[in-house]
Length: 265
Image (cartoon, rainbow, N blue to C red; front, side):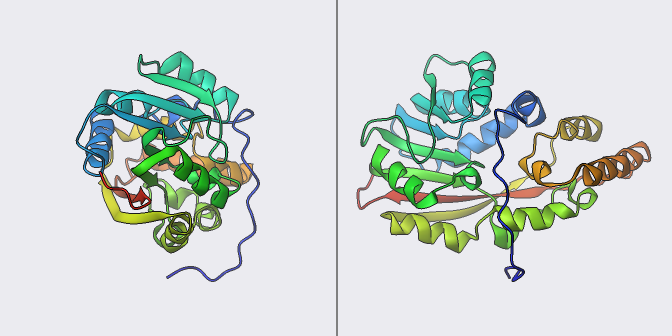
């Protein structure tokens, strides 16, 4: 059930001022986790290769080269923040990848150019979501796929670190849409909902390393918590880590797969 409490709009995060220096390290995933994501994506994309793709909100290129490896490319990493894009160009190069300045409401591609668009935890940063849906529809071929990886307000994941930062619950309720809201918005732009998926995300790696990565604060929710909340939460986390009391737990990643128009692959 959705929380009925009125929510205040969140301030926009400027990734040219924050996050980009440590994002790649703080949000790094092991190779087998990346491979699991590619396998899930492949289940919902055409079997033919190559596929032209758009990594929309590509950030530091966490997934962009893997998309090129899995689906052939070319892959266009579209990212509005100069700092994030520079980090991608330095650390996530691939012969079939090009990182370009752009945003969801203004994608620098021709009409009907892409077989798929991936939005991986970038949708909540989009300022004009109806305009973005129309723009994604423009660059997709008929029958092309949009893979929307997002948190949804009706099922916010209980991350292993969540209890140390209890204010993060309310931040994410304000940050993310419900699944119904996201589906309605894209369906109004001519998309068809093909699948709604919850993918189990097992805990990866050792806890000390996970805490060290979390301390880089490369999580957008932290930009909306006070410094006092963060300092107190990390102090409790350090104490529990020293005592061996930080609990590992899996979470879930949500995807909605949309098809553009009435075309079929």
